[in-house]
Image 1: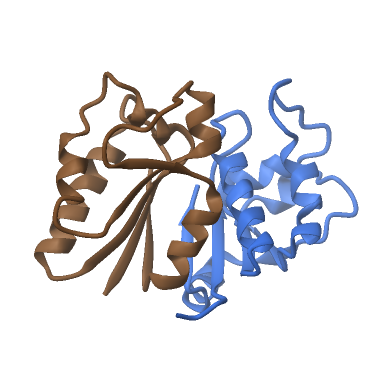
Image 2: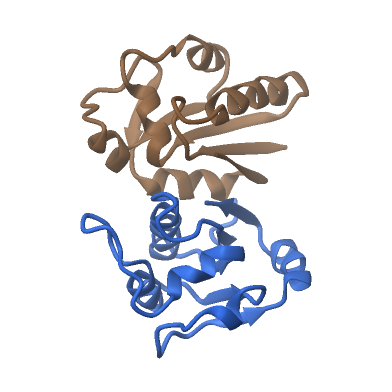
Length: 117
Length: 108
């Protein structure tokens, strides 16, 4: 058994679509806490989760703020699909790496496990 | 090859649970090993009494495959005890299965 694997968590849901994005972030945090290599990719319209002033449902956690806390859980990289990124007025000081859609395949190929939410 | 499955949508909102069950049966028929099925987020509602568990329970009769309801999700649905052949555990169990698995497949 290998004690560490590289997990890629792909988030594809736009704001207000479902709680799946938060479920994905919980999985990312759990993997980080258990000493795994973890990357997160926001794909397609999921990048609008990072829109400044985006409100969350009162009972839900704030996606952008949760993403900002990822380094505390040793989540090493947050990738942003560039398809809609120019349209997003993102919250400041978020450490993300833009990635072109045609490079996402490379990201997936480098991961041991890919979870889609 | 060793597989672990993660399901994220409930049996009431999509056919993900049903597709995952068919996939699990096909895996075994093809000679692969199923380590775990993790019912995460809304899919943990499969543990509610009104859902049919027989197909899943059949998977565990002659293999060591684990059927796990995510503990936080199960609590959300008011599930205090797991159906026969199922257990309740946290996300750590899903990550641990990933260490042994060659592939983790998400349904939902």
